[in-house]
Image (cartoon, rainbow, N blue to C red; front, side, top):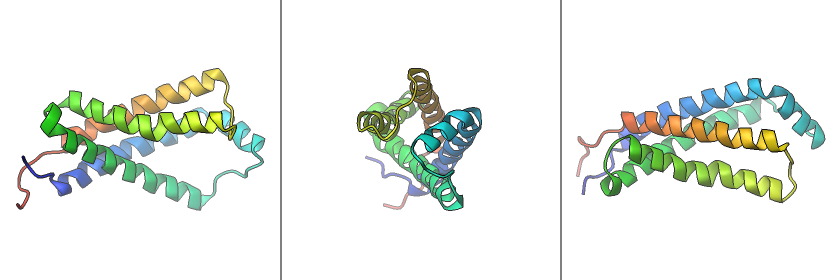
Amino acid sequence: MARINNGRVVAGGLAAGLVINAAEILSANVFRGQYEEMFAGLNLPPMGTGSLVALVVGGFAIGVILTWTYAAMRPRFGPGPKTALYAGLVVWSLGWLWQMVVDVATGFYTLSLWMWGMAIVWTFVEVQLAALIGGWLYREGDVPA
């Protein structure tokens, strides 16, 4: 079994993280009103620089985890977009869908059915695109034994 090429995981992961961060920035602009309403409803101030930096770093970290998941799945499912989409489904399910369910179930926030559905669709597409980019950049080989 081939070893995971960690350098390519990081390279693909950073590219995937760039897709995630770009999609999140776009989402913040498209859904600005809904986010402002949610923060106001929770009596929270707008996010500061520290929060934004943490989210960007987290986006890149998730991109690396996503690409590593793809690399780990390749021996079982084979290289290519189908495996990348499976990896994206795993990471999205654990990182986005589950968190949305927990947040709504615990009452941390409530979103309109439309907004919650849109958030699920938006993040699903975002993570799938990131998985395809990370998987496309990942290659095995040139890994010391």
